[in-house]
Structure formats: structure tokens, C-alpha cells
Length: 172
Image (cartoon, rainbow, N blue to C red):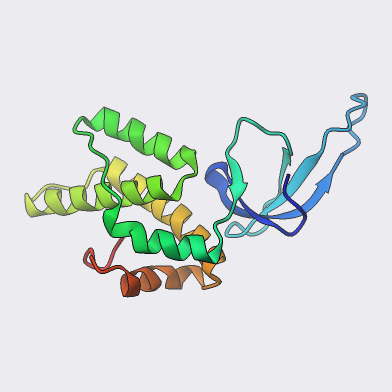
């Protein structure tokens, strides 16, 4: 169980701060089930109430600064997804986003980025699926790295570019 004030990754919502842990008095239920009151860090004005023992949504601690630095250093070694079929690729993208695993988000970013470059080189348009999941993975990754590293979200790309020897034309 996490504590009030901790930062967590909550499903596809992303990084949230635990504002409170409470047992709301829901009329007629007699339940004393504990709930997290979450405040999404990059979606102002929203609050989420979720059971502490929620097993349907991935809830995990945000990476430490050391873990975030290690992940950034690992980026060149993280392989792309090896899926040729478009429908299967979308399924893999969806599962990777839902996994809450930053390495899987990097795999999506790298896969979709290289696919976009290849398609552009052939005079084709970028697919909506690649673009949508690229941005979703980038949002999740950059939000968590921002909190873990204590830097502004908009500075994360530059932080990565400074540290990753293999540059991907301004993107990761």
C-alpha cells in the first residue's frame, strides 16, 4: 500500500499524486474498503477514487531518479516490437500502453518512429495507429520521467537527447 503524498502510475491515466487514503461512507453498504484519492499530475482539475486493492488497473510506484537515469541509458538497447501485421501491431501497442511498463512504451516509440520514417521515405502517409500510439507512449514516458527526474515535462526530450548516444532525429 502506498502513502499519502506518494507519486504512482495509475493505469493509462499516468502519474498521479495520492492526495488521501480514505474509507468513504457510502450509504447502505456498510463498507470500510479503503480508497486512494488521486490527483493526476498532468490533467489538472481531475480526481480519481480507486480502491487500494484494485486489481483491474496497474498501480505502481513512480521510478526513482536512479531507475529513471538507468532507463534512459538503456534506451539504445531496447528493441523495437517485431510485428509485421498491422492489426497485430495495434494489439501489441494497446497491450504495451496498458502494461504500465516504461520499457514497453519505449518499444512503441521506437517502432512507430522507425515505421513513420520508412513510410515517409517511400512517399506514404504515416498511419493513424502509429501516430496515436507514438504520442500516447511518449506522453506516459515523459510524464513519469519528468516526476522521477524532477524536471519539467517539456524538458524531458532534451534530457534524453543529451544522454542517449543513438539519436533518432530529435525524437525517442
